[in-house]
Length: 529
Image (cartoon, rainbow, N blue to C red; front, side, top):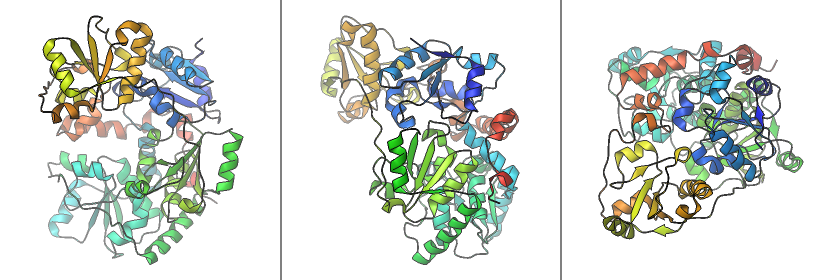
């Protein structure tokens, strides 16, 4: 039987200091339009895939919500079935929260975005406008522009002459990028948060260079009609001189002391695991290349800059214990210093990669795999009219290219299956299809028994030489509940979307109540006496 909780009770739980996992089980677009401040996106379409990673302790107190449309109740049943023992549904969903007088927030990564604005306000982080930076470049000034985003974002667009160095790598690699201690450094991102955090990271480390954040990032640059560069491959150096590592480790340790970042050893982490009283996250903050070469058992890859920028993508439990590590003693303390200011219980793992620490891997429970059909067999069945295709990939991906005649669908809104023919599912991740199939089987077992999965997905279809079709309006915008238009369109030459995004970002602070603001520990409140 579903356990419900009122908005008033949930508000009290969020600020009582105990662990709580607050999940928005709507799809990404719905979440981004209006959600609770501390809500973690856990779309119903991916529920059983992502829940064990975001909430590894099955006994954690958990609240989920939807649009008061029954999705949360279905999600609660599934979460109970895979072992969660304290699942509650918010009465009235997101609108029930608003009707109780509490604020709903638009956008994504809201606590982290709000944090960036607080950091700028508390530390008075120096900044430079796009026009000012353009003038510096035109004059030929000695200035280094560092883009603090991951390589994948940097490739899309960046400031001409900038160098990609994600924020989590700045402390380790900045001296290799800027050996002259008098050269001004400008840190940019797509908008504001990572520009501010990156610049303030260097300032907190005591870098002697003049350091500034680029106001409004690449969006501010674009809004001034300045040219952006696409496909740049300039990036941070892989190798850092041992003397530089030693110097930056000392600076990082001083920073950790300043912000009271605690250490934890492998034995203590093992004791926490045995006690089972806390949700634990072991986070490897190094680069993707380093993580791919090997990490600690049970660790998740959480690049340092992104762990600050988008904490809710890696950690789904408020007041959980976050244990960070690297291989150099530089990066983890820096990232932990920011996470503690964000209000998280963050620790640095002593001896890092060499600690022999581990966490149990999150247990997953997924339905059985579906029988597969080849692209050639599907083409033949379509020609004979004996099969229907349902595409479960993201809506914008479907718009770009799909099997001719396919129907787009998503797990919360599955259409009825044809009873007189097979249905073939297409998914980027076969697990998405397995979860949808299980829902179909619960309500139409006979029709669901005729489900198949396209082996190799749409890539196999196109590789076999079969045509696809696209559409600018199918599915219609109103049905694209997995897509948040104003966040994504700012990267596609849409100036109105860029302005809307920046106005949203700078307006976040005014929306917080006293309890939400009080959870951050920025500025004087964060510094060890």
